[in-house]
Image (cartoon, rainbow, N blue to C red; front, side, top):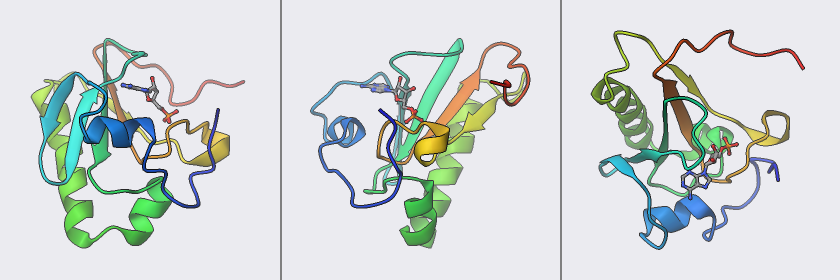
Length: 126
Ligand code: AMP
């Protein structure tokens, strides 16, 4: 079910539970600002999610309310995770779904990293 990406943070969303260790994940990277793990239903040979460790519902929430340190630490993690996955030479795509139109499903801000094959056009027409 898509979510709005606005409103209050749900402390029991699936990524909050992964952050607390209540649900397992295939971890790729973790530091004070970010956790990266493999998507449970990968859409590409490499499909990794990077999430901030802080409680932000969406990119709208994160960009408006996170500290400079959280924002810098998170985006540095996205780049370094992609590099550690050896995706820089072939290239990769990042994507963040915000709200209903983008079909955001998990109400904790996350960036998808896709790679491992040619990724085709940016958007497929409906
Ligand atoms: P989005 O539509 O951008 O909110 O994407 C949510 C993503 O989270 C989807 O690609 C799901 O496959 C993924 N996902 C949901 N639950 C889990 C989980 N427990 N572990 C890893 N990935 C998950």
